[in-house]
Length: 436
Image (tube, rainbow, N blue to C red):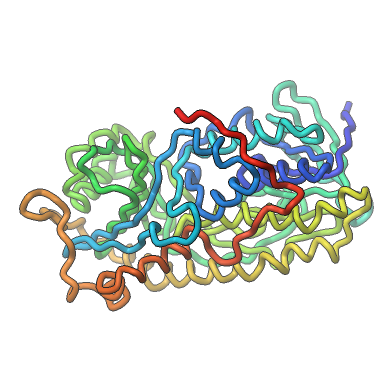
């Protein structure tokens, strides 16, 4: 027997886009239900960056103090390490506004906060362990979803005036709607893992560039979240060489980290991110809208995927909540206003990512060379030495000669094109919260 239920706005996926959209719709007085496939938000190596534009949004929603009470690390600058030494690439202390940083917060803490705040709204419902298995239709119109309650195996039909897919790049809703995104080739996949961090280590984000090798490290306080790029599809063959191969590569690439690679005891400590770069040509069907990674899967370059997904959610709520609040059906002409607003910043960022793939990352990992050995980038006192200006490409030389220019990459990453702001009806005065 299938249980039948109804809501006004159905949001599939409890990630950043889904939870922000659910909160905003509820603050508009719209009856909204968010379906989350899992029992909780605990997933390792999800994007843990909350960018300056999202921090500004939280302030507008009256949640700045509550978010600040969550344990976090602030990323203020990004450093690049080359074979010849180090350079500072980005300085977020030059950003406009109150938040001159990116906050590094476990995504489950961010999502738990949004769920807690949204639950204070009488029209909000979060259904956990609800796995979507199909769409409901009335002719060509999508009228909701069928989902399985994973706690007891029961099937439910949940009908809605509008269904919004926020269920990521492997979107079950998109598959059920038979929508095929345009795929842009990518040259790499990424291994994610953790290594211990010491107080004497560099602060913030670090990128390490060398011929045939590239990695990024995010400062998480007591550990580094590390991403090591490998050629697309190369995971199986590389794993066959044993965990010692990754330990050797990483120690050669970053000698000052060599004594910590033993923390990688087996391949169980290393997660593979299958990198994709995709975009739907049309983000809607009658009764259905797709946003975030469900509409446009982003490369991890710049770490801006969450930023764009949250901005999609804010634009969606502002443009569609008034029609839903009035109780009417949202026509496709209105749904398309979301894509019209959010398409160009999405295409612009993806274009920049494709350029980075072709010009920097692809060539960096195309040649299988031994990792460099020796004190790469180390000064005589054991610190990290600056790279000679003459050894750097022209853009990096300019960033070193004129540090004010470091605000440009900071703004592109931390704010991005077309940041969205909370509609007036969603704003609240801040509630002071004691910080730990």
